[in-house]
Amino acid sequence: MINKGTDQNVVLEVHGNENRIEIQQNARIANLKIVICGNGHKVTFGENVFFNSGMIIVEGLTPGEVFIGRDTTCWGANIHCMEGKRVILGKDCMLSDNLNLWGGDSHSVLDLQSRKRINPSADIIIHDHVWLGQGVTILKGVELAPDIIVANHALVTKSCKTSHCVLGGMPAAVIKTGVTWDRNLL
Image 1: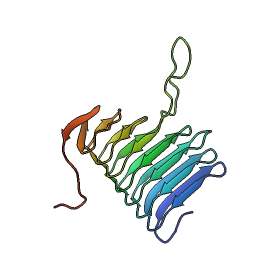
Image 2: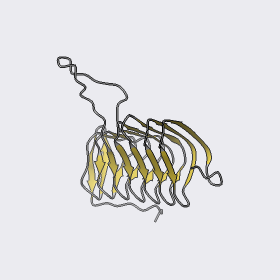
Image 3: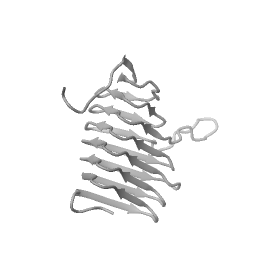
Image 4: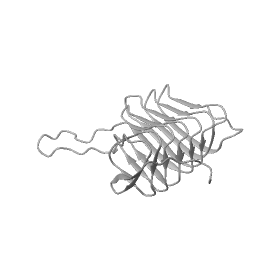
């Protein structure tokens, strides 16, 4: 499950059965706590992933999934996946530090009259080649198109289907178009 040769300070807390943590070739994880509560959940670190610190929580009665695509790097993120939903990070994403991806609320919000829950969990889908700046928060139900930059400390509450743009603000909105990014300082 965990390759001790390349992974340091990884804490696993698993409650349930038939859960899987998959670390593909050349993936490196460190300073990470993975908490799984329930049965049949899956966490995958793709090839050449570098995940430096944070926490991944997957919980619920229905199997959920956290998937981090190949060549993605992360300097610090808390990822919370609930109730059979997914948090998917595409390939070649670049995640700064102090990030939060919240696929659910952990508590119920009820309609006062009907007493029915009105805050269901939802997937978070981040497509390939997305850069999340420092302190970004992504909320449930968000899908980001490929090749987007999310500015530092942005609060992303809605999906963005426009590639080659910068999102910024609270709540985040498109603030620039016609851009891309490169890992190298050119």
